[in-house]
Length: 485
Image (cartoon, rainbow, N blue to C red; front, side, top):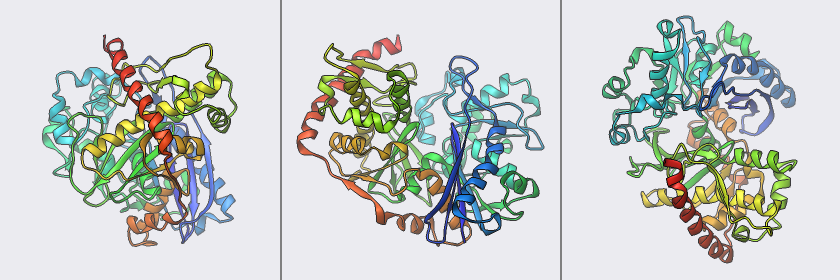
């Protein structure tokens, strides 16, 4: 009973096919790009996602040697914090305001951050959906025709099966979801002037959202009536795909942005606001930092320094000692998310001398992202959330050099997940659970745990990194006045 998992990303849509044993049989992707029409704005045409479905699925099926009729279920995971306005027929009225867009900053002025944190577990921030809805309702010419506000995943699910539904984890990213009542909260809806009737319903990520309609079959190339799961956000599906569904392991997904988080059995809120608390599978919570440009920093380095590939960058970094000969890099290329959220912060190298070359800069970039990871892991530890091991996924997990740096910086064993692209794996797990191929998401995720490589920290490197980490924190504090002036 093969199933398909979809990862609806910012730069591509990936499709994978897994078999009854959850073994990867085929994968393919279709590339596209966001648009940046003004400073601080970031948009994407939802039609790009719909157009990418059929060729990505066809490519994955071809590699798996399977026909569309062989597929018994499908699930979608994808970028969160987007805002898609649709009319009564489900057609997008404007481009999606995607996760990195900050145009709605004015919409959160005067709202008490403590109130938002206590009610939602989130940091009051313009990237969250509620602020974007408020901006769109006031500024979009088409605002009067809006029937529903979607996130990217729920938009595609509705296009495929006709039901507007979102899972608990994605709903908990909106600033409209009360963690204690596990649903949209009246006081939050009033705060942002949003009508609950214009939001998707909420259900479990592995529940069946519906069956593919004729329109859904045409968009995917799969048979009419193929079951479609509710799905979830990629932050959460990456943790599921990496096997992080119970407390004890930190999930670190090294995609374009780096998401670091862990599962908690109890509700824990961060009074300092470095990490946010989300609804998760069952009655658990996923406590995480939504991420800084990490893989994005690698891409920037390659382009700026003329390096061909991430592998070539890792090879350069391996020639430099731990600590990059006292060269530091702050990974704030799109604002800082650690050790504090400062949207206006900018990235920086510090300590450059004529001695430092391309290789030292390469290692400093990898180390700087690892220092930000340590910021988050240490905060999770302070909150009483188990952080004994770190499990890497995403494209950056392919770098053994980066994995070793992270083990040494954190002083914890680092595990590399069996599949680097964990988000579509997580989506496939949701699909398998929805059709009864596995009894639970947890059971399926645990079946993936047998082929994980463990990299232990080096005590001597840990000592060197403790010094570098202290200097990184001092540098961040020293530059903060420049970012907040």
